[in-house]
Image 1 (cartoon, rainbow, N blue to C red):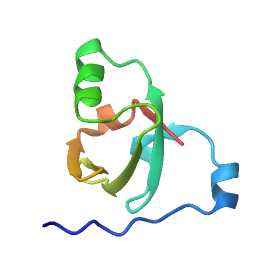
Image 2 (cartoon, one colour):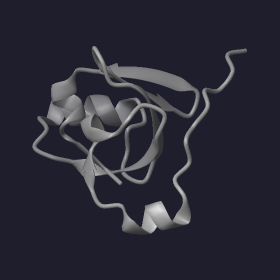
Image 3 (tube, rainbow, N blue to C red):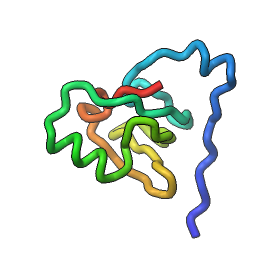
Length: 90
């Protein structure tokens, strides 16, 4: 069994003052909620949805370089930064 990585939970104060940004802007170790997508091709959107990157879903950013790596439930996924820039999160 692979252990879950430590997640940095945002405080209630941070959460209330947060504003939408892209997945590419989130620092490693932070957990965010997916709000939607910005100008993605249908095939790219379907790819993200198939792997659980859905509006309302929490994801934890594990790394940002050389690619953006996120954990969705028990699955780790890697995205090119151009894709991560088009996923809107809060």
